[in-house]
Image (spheres, rainbow, N blue to C red):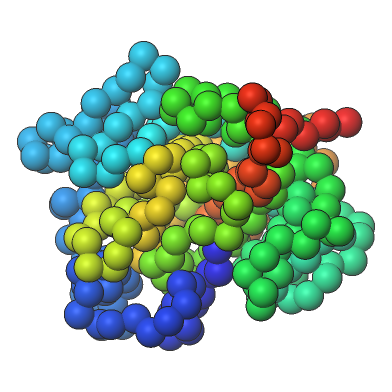
Amino acid sequence: MVRRRRGAAAAAPGPVRETTAFRKAEKRYQRRRSGAPTDFGDVVDCRPGAPNSAANAARLSVRASGATDVAGCPGLAVFPGALDAAAQRALLAAAFSDYHRGTETNLGPAPGGAAPPPAGLRWATLGRHYDWSRRAYAAARAAPVPADVSRRCAALAAAAGGGAFAAEAAIVNYYAPGDTMGGHVDDAEEDLARPLVSLSVGCAAVLLVGGETRDAPPTALWLRSGDAVVFAGPARRAYHGVPRVLEGTCPPDLADAGRWGAGAGGDVAALCAFAAAARVNVNVRQVDAPPPGASTWRTLTLT
């Protein structure tokens, strides 16, 4: 994925017509320069007991695995609250100090050494690095996806019915209020039958999920800190994007230094200030198709 700020080029290649259903939805939820309030009344909330409209509530069904299916979004599985407070803190701390070091970012190759995210950081890669100009993965530049992320994503993919899943690459998106992600399809992997697993921490956001073209009207969903989404089957080829990140919505478990405890390490005040005004989204995918005739998918050995 390529993240964009307001006014920058859209993520997917080719021109974006302002009259498509997806573009209209994006403009509806984006923050208005006039400051006029946005009506979020039709945004679907997958959290148990959420105050959905009757129509939105009727679209939701929860499986025994904990996955929530949304009518009109085939192949999409939402796991509200998949990460508890401790897991959210661990993921945020890693994104703050580790995930952007010694890797490829929108600012170029990042040096080693733990440090807060530099100004202007929008994304970083984990595992197999992605070449944005060639829209291809660099096989020679790879490191294991962090083991905790790999295990969690494999479990979520299985719970969503996506089958075996090897976490081979991830893109960490760093959002600030006002940032957006244009409608796009993640299609650089060899086999789109393998799911994409997305983890979110920090401020809440609106996720749009449409169809195989921008002309298909998208569904708007809330994503809050700790939520996970699995894109499988038809959803793997669906246009999706983030038109809005809502400031002031980071949970106290992340933004309050008193919740972190003595084991947090580093500059907890800086970490909490980052959390209070950020959304971190980790998108994990399997890159390679299995070898011909293989009965099982290749797994990644993690140390």
